[in-house]
Each structure stands twice: as structure tokens, then as C-alpha cells.
Amino acid sequence: MDFPPTKLDYHVDMFNLQSQFRFLSLFKAQDGRTALILDSTVFHPQGGGQPSDIGFIVFSGSDFKFSVQDVRLKDGIVHHYGVFEGSNPESEMDIEKGIQVHLTVDESRRKLNSRLHSAGHLLDLCMQQVGLGHLEAGKGYHFPDGPFVEYKGSVPQNELQVKQKELEAVANELITKGGKVYAAILPYEEASVLCGGNLPDYIPKGSTPRIIKLGDNPGCPCGGTHVSDISDIISMKVTQMRTKKGMTKVFYTIAS
Image (cartoon, rainbow, N blue to C red; front, side, top):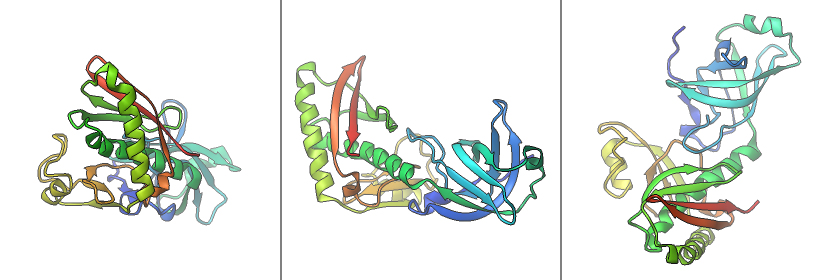
């Protein structure tokens, strides 16, 4: 069965953790997990170096409560994976299509993921200030078990420890200063201006990318969730910098 692309409500409001949408379908995935498809969602799927949200989906007019344990985006459709709590498994497939459901995202996990993800963007901004602007930002891994940002380019081995300390100092200075974080879906030309005059090649010309802007700093395209103010990161520690095979990785942690 074909479904329209899932509307990503968190793109519009990153700080809304509850909402009501419509149930479209339920199926068993190849790995045996149960997956729900809705017309819209406030759950952020895993992607862009950010872990997925978790939480609950409650079906109106019934005792069905679905515990969301993992969320993935596939071909424009968001799949909510999890298990039903306190229901008859044989009746799950008979849920009325189009019924209203209430979504609740786990607040503590969302906040942690948003802080980690925002800290990764903050590192990108700090690279220029410590003389590493020649490094090209690549992928990031913003999971609690070992977040890092990877850059294309090398740093001399004898400079790594110095740059590591400088990065940490500049990052915490920006966190202390603070600044509002904005997210908006914009026309290509307007987005390009906010991002310093040019967008990455993977953003098609004529498209309407979603841009994240931390304070008065240049923006960047991103589909993730973020803090409302840079100061919400609280503090940051750059735990390691290393260069290998023309790539530089910056590992970091944030305050608990």
C-alpha cells in the first residue's frame, strides 16, 4: 500500500513533544518488529548522526498503548517501531484506519539528543576561530556513547593538543554567552545567504532546505532537533582530537 510522505511536525516546532495525528497502517517488519505509520509525527527518526526519539502512541477510544522504541525514515515514510502494552496481539491488525492517536515523546531523551546534536554544530562554528577553518565539516555521531564530529583535512600532530584546548575554551565561551537557536524551511537563495553565501552540493538548487542558525553565527542545513538557546548545552569538554588518513575527528562530551 502506498502512503503519502509523513509530515514531520518537529521540523515546524522542535520543542513540541505532544500532538494528535491519524493512524494509517500497522505491519510486521522482516525482523519481527511491529511498525506503525501515521500521517504526521513529532518523533524524530534516527538519522543525521542523531538517535531516534522514544515515547508512546495512545489510540483514541481504545486501550491500545504503543511503546515507541525506535523510529526510522524510509523513502519519506516514518516507521515507528515498538510493542503494544496491555492489548491482545491478535486484535492489533484490526485497528480502524484513520483513527486519532496521541503522541508523547520522552522529554529527557529528546533534550539530551538535542543538546548533543547542537554541541556538534557548535564545534563547526569554533573551527574557524581556532585557525582550523580549512577543514571541511563531514559526518557527525551525536550519540551519548561517544559523540564526535569528523572533518576532511589534517592537523599537524604537534598542534592537536593545543587546538583541542582552544576548541574547548571557545566552545564554552559561546555557551556562556548564549544565543537563540532558530530553525526554518526557506527558499534556496534565502537559505544560501544565511549559510554564508553557499550551500552544500547535496542541497538541490531550487529546493527549500531547513536551516538551523545558532545565535548570530552563520546557519547550516540540518533536519535534526536542537536546543532553544546555545546556553542550554550547559558546558562542553573536547575529550580528544586525532588525525588519520587525511581526516580529523573531534570527540566531545556535554555536562549531565
